[in-house]
Image (cartoon, rainbow, N blue to C red; front, top):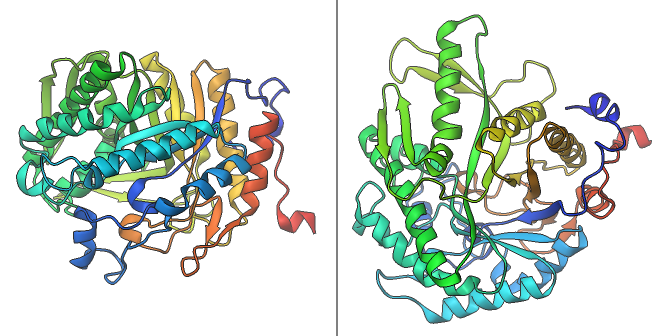
Length: 442
């Protein structure tokens, strides 16, 4: 939205309601440490952008979780998103580790006792080492494997009033792992991508059934990465067509399958899926969305038929990872979610800001879009900043810094960034004050 537009909002529009949730987000592999899974194998194979990078101890959240809960409370958070690590819970197929279950139950119980609502992700990109060999996503057995895992996890959630995310960013996993071969399992196969997509929809349905059988009721959905797409050449009809196809396939196909029961995907040059998934209709209780940036699409006359670029046509600059600063796109995709008639949770939104000074303005501009979307009738219930801590950022390794708290990766000391004060002010006052940049303050 930008500062001028935000300042023009009325006092009412600049206020968040008392029941709006401000929280923080993490994922197990990126923060816990000491995990052996498919990503650890990927790292040893030298498949990251920095071939020698290793997650290893991560930022030792496994041992420092009480400290990190305190840091979340210090920025005004009342919800904490974390994920369960399938590889800890089922290190060998069919063998459930009771010690890991007890450890996660203790962490969730302490989180709840300290006033943080658990937002629990069952699957955040990683798999046990056996999964891709024995039950890969493109085979039907994957659904049974995920069902068994969800059944083991269900008792952990009893009495916690947890918001549950079955799958984090399934389209990122599918495009990165099944089409481009950039992340585990390293496949480059269009038909397998489509088969895996359908099975992941079925896996969500299976997980929901298992949780309901144990808990009686549950709020469950997925967390979908959503991009704002724009034509690289506004005048070009094929660029504009790619934008429509991209938004439908990438942003909406999975959620539409969970709402309507009908999986409809068409990705020219890759594959298509057209299936009715039993049990999928009405199988999500909320829409979870992650937003970071905008992508410009250009049609190419030969394979791969499109280019995907981050550009800066307005001259606003990029985040340090190279993504366009485009909060308007956040508002756009929030408004698109109104079609589902379900509550919306922003399960990730954040900025790689290695200097730490630009993040308050980023948070301001994106929360301004949340307020505008709410004023236009989008039922946004909560906002979880990604991430509480600097952490291991997948293929990028240790370079990016998304954390509200800066982490010294040698000593593991957590240190507040300027965004901590700003986020706490918003979360505790329910208002969105303007940001005074350091240069202006001087």
